[in-house]
Amino acid sequence: MVGVAVTCVDTAGITRVKGVPARRLAEAAHAGVGLSPVFDVALVDDSFTSSARIGGPEGDLRMVPDLDALALLSPLPGWAWAPGDRFEQSGEPYAACHRGFTRRMVERARARGVDLVMGFETEWAVTRSASWGHEEAPPQAPFEGSAYGMTRLAPMSDYLREILTALDHAGVEVLQIHPEYAPGQFEVSVTPADPVRAADLVVLVQEIVRAVTVRHGWEANFGPSVLAGQVGNGRHVHLSLWREGRNLCGGGSGVCGLAPEAESFLAGVLEELPALLAIGAPSPASYLRLGPSRWTGAFQCWGPENREAALRLVPGPQGGPQSANAEVKCFDAAASPYLVAGAVIAAGLAGMDAKATLPQATHGDPAARTDGPPRLPENLPEAVTRFRKSAVLREALGDALFEAVIAVREAESALFDGWSPQSIANATRRRY
Image 1 (cartoon, rainbow, N blue to C red):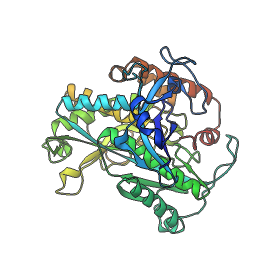
Image 2 (cartoon, helix red, strand yellow):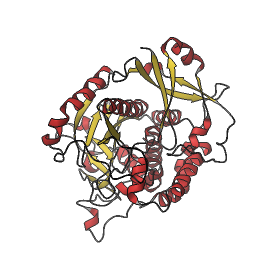
Image 3 (cartoon, rainbow, N blue to C red):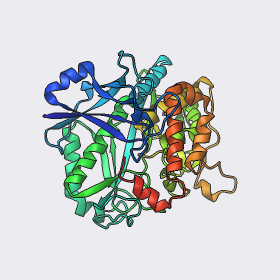
Image 4 (cartoon, helix red, strand yellow):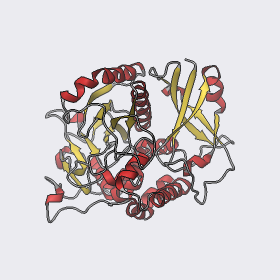
């Protein structure tokens, strides 16, 4: 090991990095490395906006690598990776640190006697390398092949093997990897973990996939939309609630086997979904993906094993309540996984506090029903309006982080105003 990539994810969903020589890693773990707070108001194109509390050239933070999460980046010889926690120069926790926010929400849940387990699915599209620019032609996959088909896996088998090998070297346990629906698209799912670790794994998996893809001379596109008008990349999050070793999402006496606490938690998430989109579907490109009848969860509803519902309940195999979980389908890889994990927990805990109950489940495609559930926001400004009104998310995030989210979302909405759908997709698809 020669160098360590210490990363954090900013409000625009970009993974930012400071490299540390391995011989200085112990010093960095003690004192941190400098990083400007201005990145919390950075946009996807690397320009900056500002909020009432964050912005401008002044100030500095200390980003401290978490050595317990240190992992080998074998596709980048000599490099390892570690997630960073950000602190003020005084040593106090930085109010807008995403990883710190997730940790605070985990602690809130534990104070209520509940442990959360989460797992993210990562989708990406492999395309041929091309010059960057929003006016370029639509990207092309290096190989054709059927959705979910061996006709796509076979010509890409060496590529996928290298990804699996690199993930194994990094200590990441893969549950499955397979071709997805869109041209050149794949998905990898890894073992669930506590929410902080689960968010860390998103970053690690994404950077390993990116590194292997580059070594093959291709590009990895994690953005929500690659070909406008076609199925895009999601990053669904699965979650379950546990108390004293028992999964509260299965084997209970409530609807679909939910325990009362789990039902209230999921009802809280469902209630906040329109506001949560400003966290989990945070780019104008997100709304090129989030459409009806695409299995993206475009409607504010839930249903057992309903892939058109924004909140899908997964009861698990018969007789196996320990594997039961819920999946939020309307989020994508433009989002900071730490903000997603923390915000979902905050919404769920609000539901528990209110003893909320789920509405009637939705069956079938809600777009085909005249009496169906409401659509989730259809564009980013609409999601920001709902987010701004959420007392639950403001209290949980704190003013500094809450206002930074609004500032970045409004600035990116203005940045891409009037652009064609494919131009937005081109400008964002490789940035995350």
